[in-house]
Image 1 (spheres, one colour):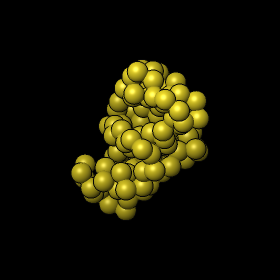
Image 2 (tube, helix red, strand yellow; image 1 turned 135 degrees about the horizontal axis):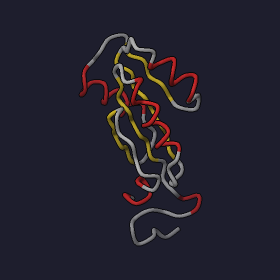
Image 3 (cartoon, one colour; image 1 turned 90 degrees about the vertical axis):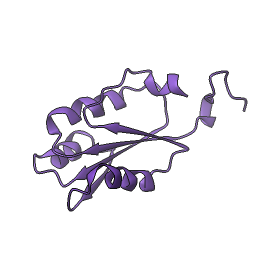
Length: 114
């Protein structure tokens, strides 16, 4: 299959994109971030939330509202670098996008970046 001019592949040849969202006590912003990821026009996406030992109910919120998201729960706050590295290691995508939990993406963001 030939790549389109912007570098993405069409049809079933589209590469898996992994999106890693690092979270620590971000319940108030995390839902908006994850909703913006579910609204992406590009598929297939793998969404991974790495939680750095939140105590604000973030984990329960993700589990209840977004059951299809891969959730990695760290027993302690490992910090920004180590938390993201855990998400990267779990990723299966050809490309990886890392986001902070307070990020909201335009629905065509991933598609336009490929």
